Image 1 (cartoon, rainbow, N blue to C red):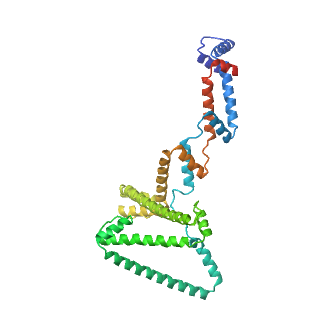
Image 2 (image 1 turned 30 degrees about the vertical axis):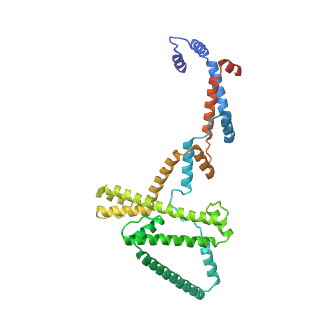
Image 3 (image 1 turned 60 degrees about the horizontal axis):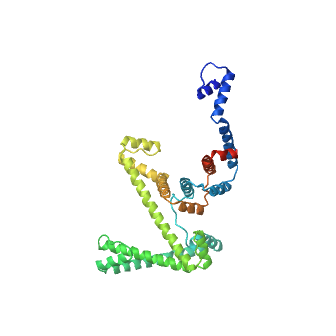
Length: 360
């Protein structure tokens, strides 16, 4: 049956003996360069085996010598997104630690407790409580004085001052006063934080710089870089919270589009209280989504998709720089072998037949 199928492929018809069929198949096979093709196939298989036995670094060098592109941008982008997801880039951000006291506070407390007895500790706690209460009172008095000062300003002056601080003049005068007060308090906090960092030793600053992946070595540069890290952290948290709120609003819209019966089924599937009305069931499902991490997962998926889209438009140089910084291997051995085989096959096809015969 197999021989008959081969004969049909070559167009051999009629009632023939097995030997006659074989002879005709061989004759036609030779006429159609069957020997050369078989030898070429054997050579290709051998070459592919040789390439598969080579290391990626060797294959890369060979590709570069022959002018073969070794990268696929989409694979680099995919591996970058996967790496960033594993490192928590798309999860809930946390504030960076840029203060030595934040790191050492727990240790200092443990040491303090180890050195004092219960009575001394109570006295120390009471002293700290009074100090904190006094500091809070001073802050409140300072805030009240500032608010009074700003209220005494004209609306035009308030608007100018807000503009100088990069704030929009929105709402009535009282609203603008509160906005100006908030901007002033932020500036004061920043100045206090800057002064606190500058009071640290160079070694303490370098330790904080190392923990926050800051390359600067000069004291002032480290201080500015740490403040930027903190500002970026605040911005990231605010952006994440906005995305959570957007995800919550989108979920609420989807839930409100469902019938009371459908909402009841959703509550039952999640083991939630069924409630008696549509509005109550929507709120129950929303609260569940906030507590079980569903909204965080939605935000992570959205962020991951946005990152993948952004990387799809990045240049090869940008992708490779990001991959190198992350320590990502962008080479795929199968791709290198496939491209080398294709390139070498095209080169052989372009050679004159006489030259190919001499090689053989």
